[in-house]
Image (cartoon, rainbow, N blue to C red; front, top):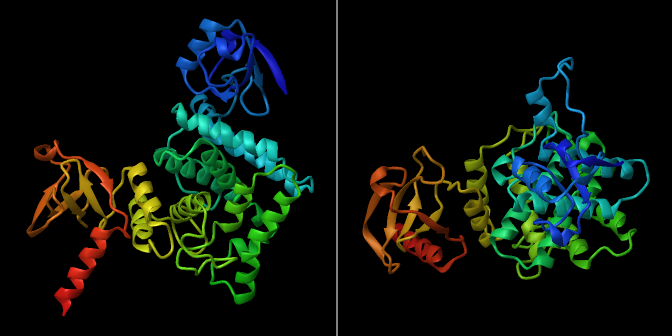
Length: 384
């Protein structure tokens, strides 16, 4: 339901869907977004007299009164950006469950709004926490993976159209899980062969739903269909190898695996951010795109033990296993100088120490890079 209100009634958590001014007359890229800051409200009050809000996507004018059981703080948190997106996508899934098919337009709008919210700082990747067993798994996972894939794609400066298709595919990548029984999805014990086969059918089920919608971009269909493919060819359903898997599918795969690792499951508890990133780094490049895993580590500013980083000085360092006071500035061992010549004697340094504040991590080396292959060769020779 769309409602016209005076700008004096604006508050955070409302979903703006129009104003009394032309879009080019106000300093926003779009007139459709979730209001998440006082600065946005002040800007709207400066340029407009009346605006339109969508009550299906945000809060109404009336603020919670003192007689309500929930505190104002809890109510504000519940109406924050991420819960709003969860509720909006749940509405899309409810339509599918009711047999109404996928409202692709609504999904595209949610993906676009997530991108805008990430761009303007309304949401951040640091706020993407794993799911608990009490959360609606598919809803939370879909929105979380969309945000992670968006953040990673933006970090890699992916072309706008490709970024848009990646966001849509990430939001819809596990759509086919709607048709699977909870006895399979939430099973704590190891799946049987028949159950594993049924689980893999969610890819074709999701594609079938999307094929029933005219105008779905081919890049979206490809990414939804291929997000379980792996560089070593061990993925499904087509057994594609590296070089045959499109970038959107690879972006969704990295985001999806990371999100699953930091979430509680019936068969295991959630991993920490650092443990999950360490798993991804070790699993690449056979199971996941190594360059994208390195990019995700850079985006999340948390460097797991065992990863190799390049400092702003050009020197290379191996992140140590010692506990880090600051995940973005971990203990390291210098292993190569600025000319990438291996050091005969490793030098230990803790980037969180004030003495090393001039040093910063510039990038993470992907595990399929030539230097890491060289290190592996030296390690093999030392064992001879």
